[in-house]
Each structure stands twice: as structure tokens, then as C-alpha cells.
Image 1 (cartoon, rainbow, N blue to C red):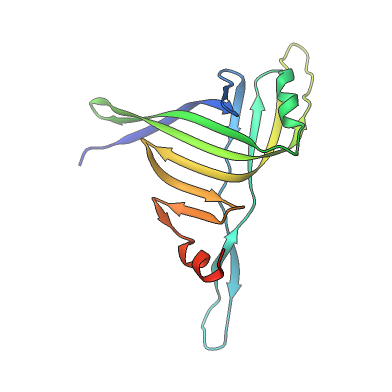
Image 2: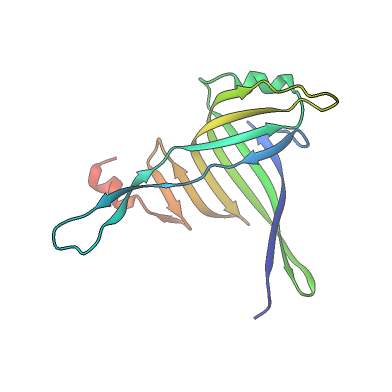
Length: 172
């Protein structure tokens, strides 16, 4: 079997469909973390835990400079914004680059804070903002690998609806 190395090293960030190419220095995508509940009972020799939902999700944007238009977005906590990162996934073998595939991270949520920046002598002012994420989706080469929507009770992995039984049983 040939050695395959994947490289995902850059992205273009879009906010509500507007490209911010070259203006976002860092983007931290949400961490999907299962909320776990401990279980112990008589007759069990140990304690274990089971999933019971998900922790809240957040994203962080670090702007590469002072951009006044970012304030109008990040300081409005009442509007849901769509945040997307479009990337190029390269796969290498010992013979060189084998493929390039599109990767799209899509999220939606509200901004909850905006760091107004710090001044340092002879350095550019950068700003950071945090987003509470309600929705996240990952698409690679047109195939949806992951989708979660905290408000619509959607959780899919590789096309499998992992909440199908839950929604049927609860009428959600």
C-alpha cells in the first residue's frame, strides 16, 4: 500500500457569503464534544459513561488587522451569521501530489464578544471575536461527512442520521 499524506493548510473565510480573503489570520472551528453522563450500578465491577447530548460549540476568528466592517458583525448578538471556510485538501505520495479536493466547513451562529484589540509599538492591531455555533457541517469533495444542528436536533455522520430513533421516539 502506498503512503498517502493529507495536507490541509489554508482557507478562505466567508461571512454571509462575503469573502474575507487575507483578512482573517486565524479561524478556530467548533469542537464537537459529547456530553457524557456517568453510570454505576449494583453488580457492575466498574463505572462507565454514556453520551447524553453535546456541549455548546464555539468558533473564534482572529482578524489580521483593524477592519471597521467586522465591528458591525461581531457586535450584533441578535443575528445569526453564516461562517464558511473553503479549503484545498492535497494528498501526497512518494511520487508527489496525487489529488486536490475541496473541503467546506459551514457554521451558523451568533457572535458573543469582540476583542477591540491591543496596541503595541510598531505592530498591527489585531482583533478577535467569538461565535456561539448552532450549526456545523463538513463537506469533502461533495460528500457530507458531518452535520450537527443543535436547534433542529440534527446529527449526521457520513450520511447516517444518528438521531433518527430519538426523533421518532420523542416526536421531535
